[in-house]
Image (cartoon, rainbow, N blue to C red):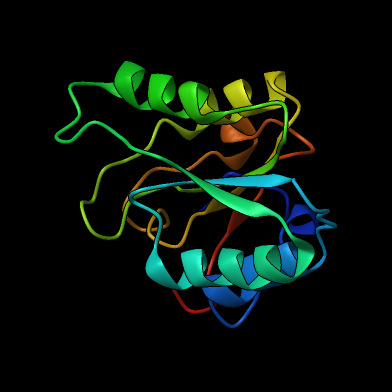
Length: 151
């Protein structure tokens, strides 16, 4: 009830970085593929993305978000502008750790899905800060929110 999700749709992990790693390491990347992050991506997550991209010959593409943001449209536009036909996965924070910006993840995920990319959302800072309804945020099956145990 706390997350607005069915128990069978959740998996608990030690922490959000472990959850992100589990998804990234199970995602098959090939040379030339791209993984989209933003300039607000949590550093440990960015390192995990680099860890899976480098040996696969994939590349990290960074969307530069407007700061301070004037609204969600600028953030979504920055994501759309960074997407290419090679984007296979986009990794976003639900709430940016460094700036506390609540990202418009539903719209970001929709833009990525429309471009043929899957989406991974690091949602570590959402529970307890935001009223969450995960199914409403989700664009199944390409969107999941990781939540650390005990938070």
